[in-house]
Image (cartoon, rainbow, N blue to C red; front, side, top):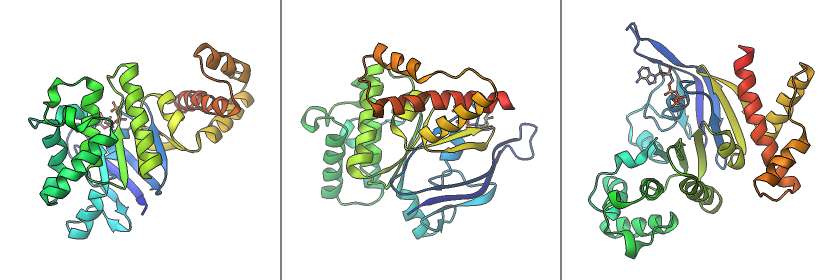
Length: 289
Ligand SMILES: Nc1ncnc2c1ncn2[C@@H]1O[C@H](COP(=O)(O)OP(=O)(O)OP(=O)(O)O)[C@@H](O)[C@H]1O
């Protein structure tokens, strides 16, 4: 079931002096099985865009459909579709509020009206999935955890809803390298083992290009680039070279990988090429303007 945005524009503060058109005529289809990375500078519209994917924001003009159903409708069918799209906000730990970790994770499924047995099972599974031992953590307060662990609780709360799509807005913000690695591993597992379609928003080109198989660069409320990371890299590289810009040679990339203790296989070079791709792509989008 794809999520489709058709000519979506979104305006904050219409009819006020602070009017801001945050999205401008976005056309986008997110297909099942994608791992989409959305990248762009602060204020480019990333959060506004992803909040349209589960009907949290409704377009000012245009429309969003989930499996063909208009996400803005108030029908039961539309509600069901919106629940298929799980959303992890920036700093999700700020939204933890229950006394115990298990209660926090249970909140969503309970709200959807599942039986106690079903809720309990979902909580166990979700905790297990994000790597939080049930016996050890279920009855603890979420506020005794590290930042990375809190975020895993927040992700477990969404996983317990059994979504087809998982939208994550800057999931690694504010975490140390260890916490970031933990989170990314879990997201990757959700994608690979559970087959969940992932849309990941980040400022960090390296994070995104290591995981996403499709990359969207957004700037000033518009999609500037959309494609496979490596293709974007190649295109940008060629364009820049044609314009006489000095782009890093592949030998530099290999050196970079070795310095970071990463194995230099063809595959890794490709991923790393992609890292540079995004850097180049984003810079170029800005310079051209
Ligand atoms: N509630 C709001 N009221 C008015 N303007 C807003 C509001 N939220 C966002 N904006 C504006 O809309 C534009 C897009 O914001 P958005 O948060 O979607 O960008 P972003 O790319 O997610 O930024 P960041 O990386 O900082 O999270 C920005 O110019 C922002 O100032």
